[in-house]
Picture 1 (cartoon, helix red, strand yellow):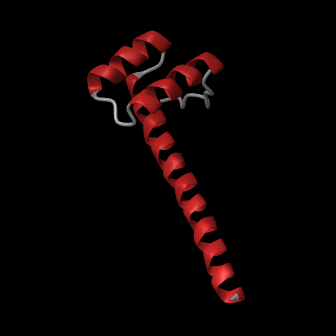
Picture 2 (cartoon, rainbow, N blue to C red):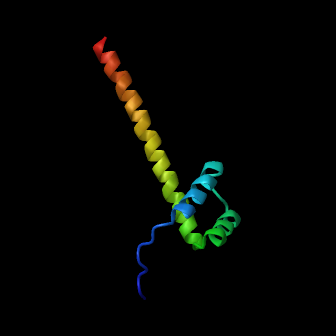
Picture 3 (cartoon, rainbow, N blue to C red):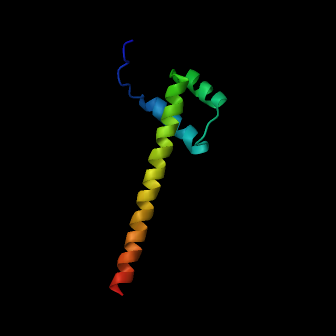
Length: 79
């Protein structure tokens, strides 16, 4: 069985996926199938894109929280 090559999504696909993600971070199977038909991607690609995006969003949020806590900690130390 031949492995498929790495595939980046087009800007249009990403824009559509992002707008859907902003409305709903956990689309159900029906929504994923609809998106896959609309964008010409496999439903699994849609599923994994959302999984990766949620992980990415969580990491960004945690980094922001860490920065805020670090700043707060630095202020307390200076007092």
